[in-house]
Image (cartoon, rainbow, N blue to C red; front, side):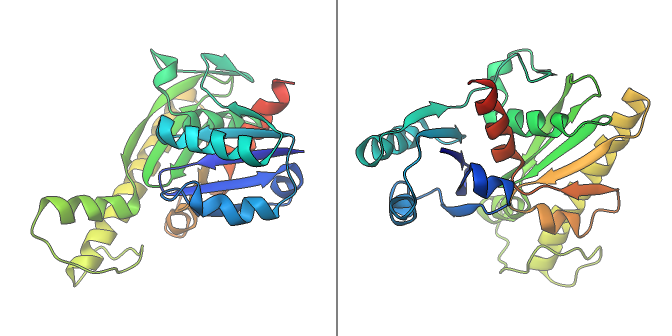
Length: 245
């Protein structure tokens, strides 16, 4: 049995092959690894292979490797980006600089078929990447995530505000709502503009796919046609592992 693990800046998510097919993904904080995974991982059936995609430090990867070696007799493979894989060609001048989470999301999105794809991953940071129908990654951009925009303002200004959720009010009447609405509107404008640019560049309708922890929040306000696939990175990891067999 394979276990697929996505280690993000905020959360670590995992699912085995059967769980991923039925969208049963578990998660814990990625700030307390290995403590946060200790109990749930000891309770699961031991996998024979563990495939990991991590955007955290090499120290976190070492902690995971050590935990697996201590408790399971499993092969461990850490995912990396490639210049070309599963029909997708990286658009980065130096392909290794593209985050592995972005790469795996592109691999999974391209396998869906159809026309060009705009892949939006809404996590601690938000990434937006375009891939054309033939699998050529056109590049993308990175911006602070919906909550992180507020934290950046809080750290670098004297603004004081509480939590107001991830809503949208163009003419907010308190500071917290103004910041969160500004963050949401920034995301909406970026996604809609890049979707338009992608369609003009490719000369055909593009599909927008949203993933990540804040996918539902962005989806609730996005007027462009789109679909939400919460665990696109894990799906890309599963595809990559199948190719490696």
